[in-house]
Length: 475
Image (cartoon, rainbow, N blue to C red; front, side, top):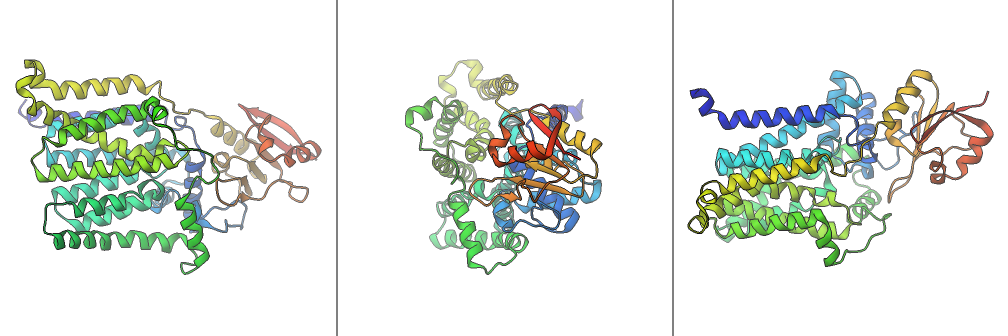
């Protein structure tokens, strides 16, 4: 019993991690479905494992001409995947299992940070708030860089605020930025402003900025070394800059109105919590607590502005959402203490814990109804082709998610990507592989209209798997 009382919070955290693991394993490969960004990550990691290159291979021996524009997910994820593939062979299951490990690492770092700055009980509430949030699972299970970057971000905050080690904090923040540059680019101004707003003499604050900046350089230098074949090419840097400045060039969107923003459930939900954090900030007295709140406030504001520039893609706001959920238990605790004399007896004693419990319960209820795209079509198509045509030359037309699951050595891909050159060679009279997979047999050829006439002339459909059509060449 003494052991149980001493380590009750740690046991509860371990139970939450176990539940996250079990819940995720039940739909590991299908929820969310395999999508383009994740497929690109798998393609890069597979080629790093098999050929030693972080690039896409849309046809045997034919590499993509600009690998640096494919790196929306950075090398901390792709290299770790390549290591896993070298140990356990290439496979989609292996990739998703590694992402579960990243999710657990993020939750553990959340607990360590909040325990070191606040209390074990508050840290438990932070873990519970994250673990019950559907978007944490939707983004965490997929082989993309948001959750690994978040884990590095939390680790950096831990070494910055709890260990007072700016060098290690900067190195970890550098890894966060390169894990998903389009999402974590706002981390750089956030760190700079947070350090400059510290309660220190001015030149000490400037020195802190330089320390962190220097510590972040190695992560960026390794990124350049790994993905830019000609690092001194002006054209390559112009392409990278243009893509990072406007990564959604192909998507049409306008800045939403204030009314439409307020009607967006996710934005309204986190606007409420941002207001709670702002109110709690006034009650904070510990300098490290105030610095953490300032950091989250700046990051959330910049991420929201970045989201406004996009066509409404909430993934640019995801990390801000996670940071707010991490801080909520401490905010409710601060408000409980501040208004203890004005609250009913129950809320004066248990208000923070009760509120966090209600939020977790609400998020659990929302979990199953969350808009997480679920599908096993890609898996079924790949399994069928791998079994029936194991050595055939196979073209995936418009679906990289199927292509990365194929085993054949003669694997071909053609897919158009937003804002950058297409990947691969389309079907033509001079290019007629043995098998062609069309993402949607009825509508998919609109993606490449010329393919329909070629399919009619040279192929026959042999199998429909969901909406995907599998064609074989006429003998």
